[in-house]
Length: 323
Image (tube, rainbow, N blue to C red; front, side, top):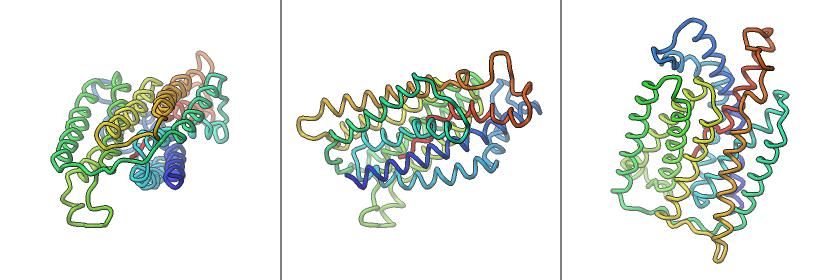
C-alpha cells in the first residue's frame, strides 16, 4: 500500500509540473495561430495549430514528464484500488496550483487554499480507509467492450468537439477525462503483465483501448487548453477521470475499503472530487490574470507571456490524470 501511494504521489507531481509547461506551450501557439487567422470556421484550433502546439519546447518537456507520470500511474493502478490511485493522481491540480505560486508568482485566494486543504484532507481519509485492490481478472469480452467504448468516446468526441469549435472546452475536458479514466481501467485489467507474456499482452484488446484512450485524451486535452476558458473544463476532466474509474473498480474489479471503513472511503472520495473541482473553479484565469480591461496585446512582451502562463495554469490545473 505504501509503495503504491508513493508511486501515485510521484505520478501526480510529474503530471502537475508537466501540465503547467504544456499549457504555456499550447497558449503561446494558439495566440500565434489566432493572429495569423488559422482557425477552423467554428473558431476552434485547427489540426495544424494543435500539432504546432505540441512542438514547442515547453510542451515537449511537459510531455516527457507526462510519460514518466504515465509509467508511475500505471504501476499505482496495479498496486492500489482505482478509487484511491485515480484520486491521488488527480491531485495534480493541487501540485499545479502550488507550483504556480513558486514559479509564476501567482497569488492564490483564500478559497483556493481552502480547496487545496480539502483535497489533502480527503486524500488522508482515502488512504486510511482503502483496503486491498481487486484482482483485475475479467473475461476477454469485457476487454473488447472497453476498446469499443474508448473508440466511440475518442473518435466520436473528437468529431463533435471540432464541430462545436470554441464552444467545446467543457466537452473536450470531460471527454479527455473519460479517456484517461478508461486508460486507468485498461491498465488495471491488462493481461500479460504479471508475469510478462508478450503474446497475451499484444493480443489483449485492453492494450489497444489504452492506446486509443491515451492518444485521444491527450489530443482533446490539448484542444481544451487551446480553446482556453474554462474552469468548467478542468472540473469536468477531474470528474471524468476519477468518478467513473472509481465506481468501475468497486463494482466490476473488486476494489474495497477496509472492513467498517466504507463510509470513510466514500466521504474521502466525495471530498476529494469536490475539492479538486473547487481548485479548478476558483482558479479561473480571470482571478489571476491581467487587471480588468487589460489584454495580452496591451502588455509588454515579457508581461504578456506571464499573462498567458498565468491563465494557462488555471486551465491546466486538471492535468492529464493518467492511469
